Image (cartoon, rainbow, N blue to C red; front, top):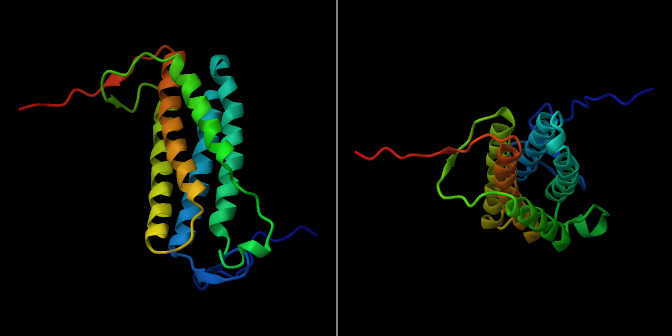
Length: 191
């Protein structure tokens, strides 16, 4: 018999962290890993939107690697920090951040120098990358808010999300460049 997808245990507005601690579903810890889950879904959408273009297909493998790291981050955020030392959950490490930096540098090496702010748009894949970047920034802000409220967040999680948002900005530019779509320069109205 297959497991049921619904348990009814959250019907009163509470949920359990990894380790069993009950918290309200609007707890900032739940908001943070829920936003990371949303981010992971947008990474999947971004990957699907570029998979049709042979020139962009190598980026899909990178996005799958990032999705794996986001599951690791979600596990970290969903864990009761007081019980975490007793459990075996996946861990994030400095090499994961260095991996992002390496890929950012490699993509930027092929891009023209940015001489202006750019507006999201020009192609659905570019816009999807920018939306994904915005969700990443929200996840980062929630983790920083947790830290500001003395709730434990692994500092590597905040660093990774910060670097990932940079990666997503650069991948948006890379997509446009490889598809030969001109960037939309922001031309501020001055009165």
